[in-house]
Image (cartoon, rainbow, N blue to C red; front, side, top):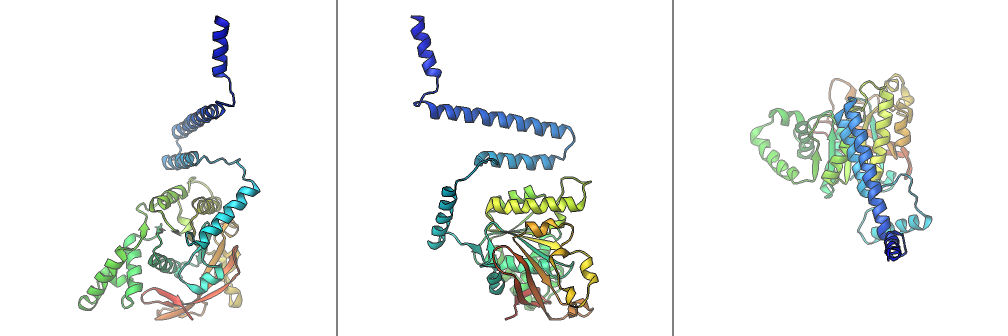
Length: 360
């Protein structure tokens, strides 16, 4: 009769131990559908209100990524789960399936840093303008790539031809990047070396950005596409800001925090170049050596960074005179290090070709 039929319908609709998993899947699917519709509605409203389409697209990419990962910002992990994650990581390291840190290729610097660049670390390399921080970053790029690791070099200041010319000049050792760019080298003596170095570098796992202007979300996307083991950003102050009318301090703070989160999210170290403020240049003597407070535009950089490395030339260095020396000593000062000690690694900079080597 109708009562039995109704009872059967209730049994099919009711949640029982037998169908609880399928019921949960339906609820999860419907919740995800609602979240997606809501987010798309918000993005549509943002576009209609005149928000920058690139910013909206970046937010949509981040939303989609979190959705696919099942990311929940309010989620928790038990002590047991966290402990098992650590033990699994240790086992992978012992079996050679994972390295705890990415070596820069500079042994003295790696020892200070605690073995190299931690996989989820945010590292800041700071110097005054024109003092060789891009040169050092390119040297790190080349050394890491020679070890078979993939490097994404994001340059927001120089074009790719300039960067490749610098890399090639540092390896050839007899000609300058300018000579390569302008083809003013001795064709009979150097052309074979340039072709040989070009063939070698063309096979290296180094990648560059196409766009001249990028925000952090776009840099993260490029890091994923290139499957980078290391991301180099040149430099922090040139990363595109979401608010064109915003204060520089606020935007640099926002980008610094976003890069730190990016490093953690990707499990990839980020080496980000930054400039020092002008107050640094007013000091003299021993006080001329850089301090964390010399980082330009935001105090957040010091807090967000796992390590801050200063690229320092003594104020009496010949580099500052009109006559460019063949070589110059420089210090890499690790002023902050969350994963090890602080200290100084002494380097020798060959000015003519841009090669930076350990002094001892």
